[in-house]
Amino acid sequence: MNQLTEKGMFLLFKGERHNPLSQSRNVIGFCSTCGSDLESLAYYSTASEWLVSAQCAKGHMALIRYGRDWSWLEDLPLEFLKEEVKVADLPREKLDAVFTPAEIRDMIACQEGSPYTRQNIYRARTKYEKFENLFGIRIDI
Image 1: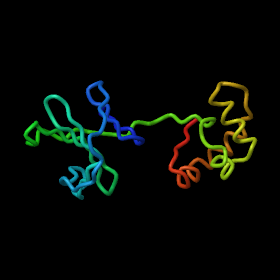
Image 2 (image 1 turned 90 degrees about the vertical axis):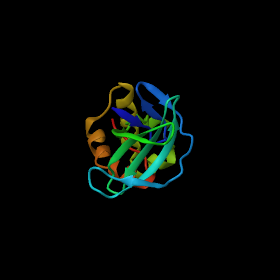
Image 3 (image 1 turned 135 degrees about the vertical axis):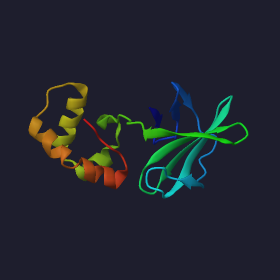
Image 4 (image 1 turned 30 degrees about the vertical axis):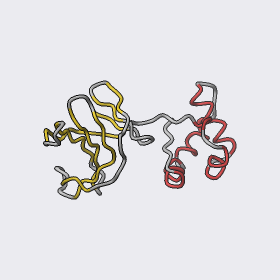
């Protein structure tokens, strides 16, 4: 599967990482799933082709391949790469805004494989969506 990192828009295509040449947003076609407008997320270049990552308003994603002359070749499936975030690496003030000190302590312990209190992890998990909505960071332990 072709994957795109949410931070930096790095593309993983055919086992190689590609840096974006541009992250300009343009309507570039229609979504093959729902028919809504596809908007570019980033543009990439390889030795033989152009690649454009795109997403529609409903969240469907596609990787569009073009020849060097910008002739369309094909649309490929694309998904965001699930990036693992270490709770200990997140700013403490952000964690404190949503979680209790005991929940933070045990989330870190859980990620590190240390002993933790299960009930604190259960309580923290109910707050993951709130944390993601506030700060745009998904926690997955």
